View 1 (cartoon, rainbow, N blue to C red):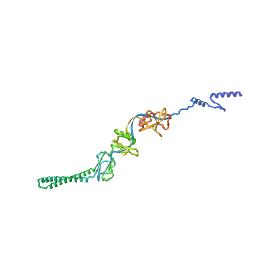
View 2: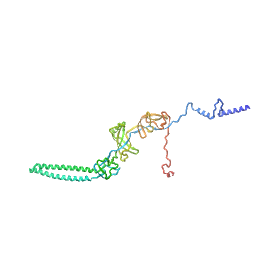
View 3: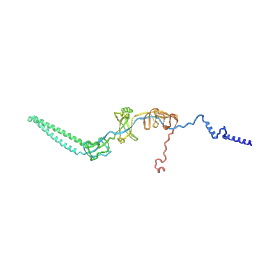
View 4: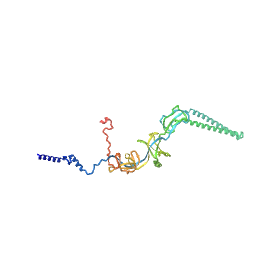
Length: 403
């Protein structure tokens, strides 16, 4: 009986060994077939190594060399070249307003007509007085001729001749005085017709027909703003002033104002002769074409002063620029690792940055994913996604899309 039990145990042990199952006993190490497989797989890997972690996914952009304009960007204030307040030059009453509020006017257009009846009466009075003076002068000339003839013959004394000559001169002086009075009245008559001093756009009209106006009034009848051309005033930093003046000495400096398709062009008209010590800037004004009236007085507008073109500038996407404690820097991808490269920025134009130093123009810089990067971190460059294809029937009415 004992011998039969021993045979059965031996067969069980051999079966367990064949299937990879070890029966636990004190001092033994138990292991299942799964654990043995893991141990075998781990044994295939080199000793002391770990699986390589994937790199940080990033987007990159190219650093290239190309021609870039040298631009000074500023925020300008639109100012009319001429903004003229229309006021009465005599005490009178507005008879008629010949223009609508906000209308476009041309130089010389009639705007207001004032009451001129009193001045016309004075004009008629001086006209008659001048005619009287001229008639008296004619008579005085005849009297002088007779007095000179009689004095030459010895009939009368020379005193009568001198008296006739004096009377003639007095009448001529009176004629000159009356003519001056007449000119004064004509000048005041011209003030009763108020005309546009410049071409532009008129604002609100404060004096309607029937309003009594006086020379001492502080409020104007209306304001005419010259719209084309027009000024844009903006501040130029002190470091750029010398470069701007040097370019102006060579020729006109182009200025662009506006956004998108609403861009007006012009050139620098002048630079103020005093710098603002509080801001370290100097005011410059550009004369802009404004025939379409895109630029409106008093508004703010982005302005760009084009100083020239840099032929071989190093440029990169603006999204790659990072600011650190030591200044601006970028992450450059080298051997699938991010490398911190300090740079100096010359200027920013739209979505591009012109680099003064630090890059050569052939690198790849990280444009997205910088928050997870550090110097030497492995990166994985994302594959650019192709533009999505339009679905059939997209952009068509529902009835056509179904067909």
